[in-house]
Length: 418
Image (cartoon, rainbow, N blue to C red; front, side, top):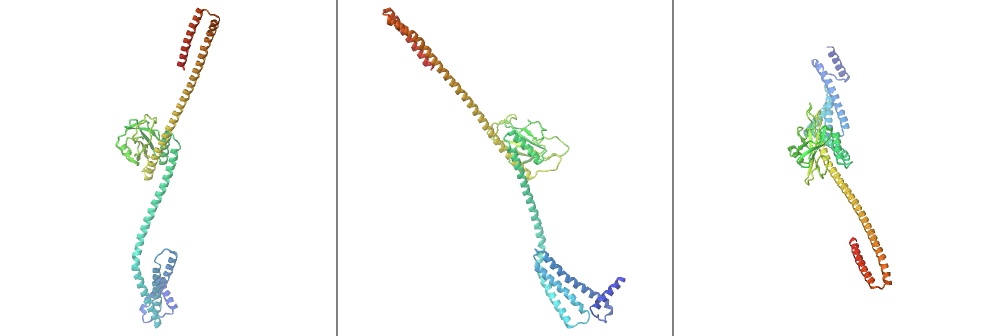
């Protein structure tokens, strides 16, 4: 009751301050008139404050597309506030001018209200589409975020590929290439196990040649005609296989579910002795099998960029192995040529020694054949000069003929030796 009395006194003071005299003929409605009067006052005050807030909003919102609608709406609110404000002078006896001003304000308010209402008919669909545009922009932003994530993933994959390629290409030893590949893949992808199966000479089996954790005996074999192996060899993409596959049973059974397993083929562009038992010397194209296993105690799954990384690494390993094979062949050819050169040089020296020995032998033979003949012929010729007895001459002639025959035989022997 006290608050009601205080409100009544407040209304009375406001009415008295405006010098407005309420019709005394309505004493019963005096309180109602006071409430209407104060209500019109606060309505006018609120109407005049709203355009100020709209102006502030327009200045701060540089991208709002309907500023002219806000201008019309602001004018409508101002005129509405003006009608309520002018209505304060109509609670008592007022002049015609007040009535004209009141009428003009109401006409303008009605006109602006109708125009604003018509404009809203065209704007409301656009305003409703703002939500659709917002959803579209959100979807577009999410798509851009996904694309940026893909780009970042591709950049990271490219960085890993470059790193792995550098490590693989840092050597031309085949065994080092394969061990480096398994170690770097295991470190980059956080693998539990990574194994490499190589074909045997017969070409009907794959032999376990390398493992990452050294927990499996190297030398295990599986038939190459297994459906899972044919599935992997039939495509150049990484294929997810069952953890219970024969080529994937490389880890001990634990209490956790085995992690996902991926296999990819490694083209053997050039094959030679790899010292694992035997290697095929066939001209047909062969593949090795690389098996990669995720940890058993995690819920990880293979992502697309990880599979792409595995595929690229498999191709790089194939190229590195082919380069290593070519280098090994060139080194073997060089060693063979060096051995042949050494053998040819030895044969040349032996031939030169044989020629020198033959020449020395012939020189000695020639000297030794001629020295006795001079010693024999010269005394006989001297005796024949001083002796004229016929028997002695006949004997000298016979001896000369014998020496001549022996000389011809020695010459023939010399020619044969030559």
